Image 1 (cartoon, helix red, strand yellow):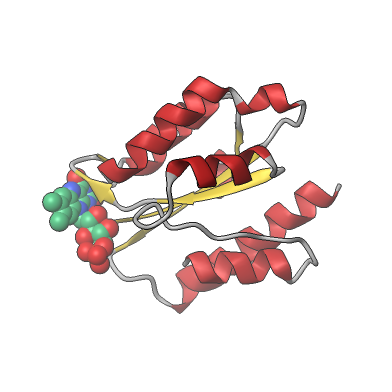
Image 2 (cartoon, rainbow, N blue to C red):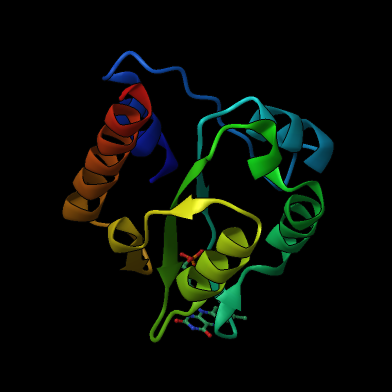
Length: 135
Ligand SMILES: Cc1cc2nc3c(=O)[nH]c(=O)nc-3n(C[C@H](O)[C@H](O)[C@H](O)COP(=O)(O)O)c2cc1C
């Protein structure tokens, strides 16, 4: 899903950088977020919440107040779930509190493994987000 979103962003000639919470230090991710006009966050659901590893990054973001960079940053979200989900709602609250404009209506939440339709939606989300930051 992340790859299709990045392809969608780059199809508009907008630069995109991908990080993996599992491997990349939060400090590096945070530095890139502060330099960006928008972020896309993807997290699976665990016990009605975003997968816990995202917690550190959310804590950093709530401390740093990215809105203070002078650029009101947009945030788009995607998630996988097995049944009722819940990650998107929690991420929306956390990022809104941290000062992001979350594209709530555009969030993609799919069940288990994404199908071709889900992947197309991801590409379109990336494209739309890129168009917004170019405005
Ligand atoms: C420990 C555990 C807890 C989970 N809790 C939820 C949940 O509360 N709600 C939900 O919709 N899916 C839940 N899921 C399903 C995962 O979100 C789903 O398996 C994942 O998004 C798809 O990734 P996968 O293909 O790696 O399993 C849970 C899965 C595991 C393993």
